[in-house]
Image (cartoon, rainbow, N blue to C red; front, side, top):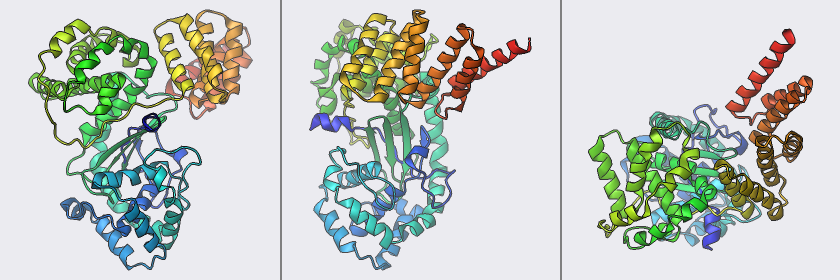
Length: 503
């Protein structure tokens, strides 16, 4: 069960309104923007349903009066003749959790993986462990959506959501930009997204984080002040988590320090059980300390508190990050050097003096479990890590192993791309052409396909075929999933060809 739970973990911030979305409109999941705010009619419907069924947590909070929409929705629903209400109440009562936070959490998870209105269907295969018991909710929720006229309530709720979003948007976006700037991370990772939702129908002051495969989500309910630090914490985790797979061999070299974390009474078991997860969280905290704007004393206080809580490498990373800041590489490239620089003996000496806290205040963000990747995905991450470290031979072996682990064309396409890049570096032009073409044919990530066309264009130029090169560069530009860098490179290449033709 632990492996299954980890497979579905996703960091998740939920802010349910996009200012660019028309009232009452629900964008498809494919249309949601990367690293930003999004609407969720599914979330709204799910939380409206449990409010009608008996979910009363936080109703006495002044924040409910601030936006009023939760009370108004509940009042409206109480006056409607909803045929499925008795069935909905029975379902809610049967699945009620001992704590209000746990009760809300399962329905948030459901809303994140369920399909769109009006059917709200769950995937046929495996779903997160807390969602599996709720499979019967889809049919009831579909009936509730129609009988309670939720589409009309959703339209009427837009002014309240827009008002709430206007309070959260600027400080949250600024925090994410600051984190991106520090990490020198222009566009996240190919094929992954970090999504933020806000919903006003849950108990106030809730921040819940999920990580499902390639998607990270944060769902928040009304708070007195924007939870900027918590959202940035989640975003840093989203950026750094894949690196723990990519550089797992580097991390293992420092695992002897794990025994000190096991002696920290207040540290959650999730971190004690998984050294990569612990190291990642220590790094997040160290970066947060570097981003504090309150002076060196406050930074040191933050670091000391993290150490007392059991995040044993926070001080080490905080010191080592100064070297990262003085060089020019992006963080994802500098990462193995940073981890390698940890002096185990020095940290053992430091940790022998730490007085661990016996308990800590309740956190709004629960510790995330380690993402459990498919074996092929994990091998791809390892291969890319080896390639980043210029370990060409082992990277090639790892990319080739992917074909033994999966028949999935998209994953095989990523492996073809990695092998093509290696052949390109080694100036094996014919082999590179073949592998980049296989990448294109595999229908893998649009961003990878776009780069493959770019490289095929460059190789066509090298072979003396500007017409074929032009076609490939244009395909890069026509690919909606192409990164800004790929587009820029293709545009420059086309301009160069045009200039040569004019001459």
